[in-house]
Length: 293
Length: 347
Ligand SMILES: Nc1ncnc2c1ncn2[C@@H]1O[C@H](COP(=O)(O)OP(=O)(O)OP(=O)(O)O)[C@@H](O)[C@H]1O
Ligand SMILES: [Mg+2]
Image (cartoon, rainbow over all chains, first blue to last red; front, side, top):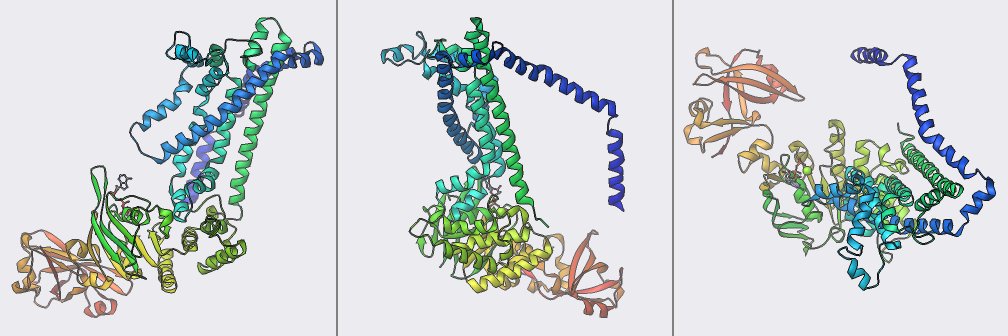
């Protein structure tokens, strides 16, 4: 009796709270319009401009040595930074979720720093450190180590902007999951590594993949920080985003937008992967939830 | 001694969680670690398991000093308060885990592992659930799977942290009996933590009462109940009426049948079943009024109100079998005579 009156009360409450139809449609249309105007239209422009002079011009500009070098460099940067940020992210999340130590909250704040600092500043930091007048600049040049305006600088700057991605994804997840399953594994005779690979990692795998994916997208797409440290040497220190800018400034619109189309494709692939991940995760949860009675 | 703990102390910052605990548990016992919330039961169990490091003291398992051994070398089975089943593994995989992580030369063949896991699942009567995930089990089922998983590695001691803590009353009752029988069959030295004195008394062969990080008393359930070592134990184990002689109860106790010669302390604890009542025949000096009663199954609990000499009323509880109470023909508000058969005295 009580329950019935409670639900009917809720239902009537919901009814009065639900908006008239026109509000719903207006909101949906407005959202679609914004997405169309600010997301789809630019994407379409990229494609139109890239193919403005036809397929041949498009493929020619993509197979230009400078463009190829830019893509290679971008891949190299991603291949180096993503594993490093992943290892860093997993260890940082582990430390933060598992241990209590002084300055833990400070550490969490510091991990967020790259999110709040402008990427240009991130680049400038390395210029200040490794530049000719920088703290380590003279030491580096004495030992014939090129960091600024070379690949190491680009990788360092990319590391700086991407290192929170995996950690940020994992910290709340690991805190929520807790330590008990790992302790159970240890008490059953598992070694530390076995516990990590058989218990910890499977429990956080979706979050980890998500973080890696976002990190990869950022590593390949980063412009600001890389722009400051790269020196824009064609065929040598231009990543794909820098190559796009340089081409554009030189009125090579097809080359510029052809590069942009690659980055746009990367974004789409990332989105697809993300969707697949979420779908898989839901499926797994559903698989575990069937047959409950 | 199967489990031996010597002078264990543990601090969390300035807080003393365990204060110089020593404990010996003979082979094959089923021991209850009993105490109020926050008294250090889990901490002690985790130190025995090696999941926590003591600040001081030693742990011996089967005579070997294991104080510096990591948990994986201690051959213990640990059942966690919230089960800690591996959520991404089926029931079968959960139970098989301990067998599969063994180093290659000690590892059993896959067929033997299979047989063993199914045997264990049959032992806890849940073989039909082997391909479920932990999410799909009831609390009682998870509890039994957690136990099967701990037993799979043939531990030399079994440690259970509030094994029935998260279950409802009727499931608890079933599982208590079940655990007792299982222990009887397997005979693994076991410690289980509980803050429910009834559970401790019912299941354990030995009870260790803990309070504020110290052991208050250790003994067989009956001994602890009949001979509580101090006021805390007396109060914590079973119901008790407390009479403080400093609040003018001495005279009253004399009229209730405890002569001055019998008064061996400042505080008297009287079990409800040690209080005998009957309808008062001489209304003049009857001190006690019957206020109410509650049925506790076979027993009845009677609430009496004693008007003190200084005027303020205090409740006293008595217990007796139902039929005995019925024969007294008492009603609410009746004056009754009261006699105390036995009291424990504390200072
Ligand atoms: N990691 C920790 N840091 C600080 N204090 C702790 C920690 N672990 C336990 N304590 C404190 O130590 C005391 C004993 O804790 P413990 O978990 O052993 O209690 P318990 O007897 O198991 O209680 P419960 O019945 O509620 O589970 C508690 O007061 C608790 O606050
Ligand atoms: Mg506890």
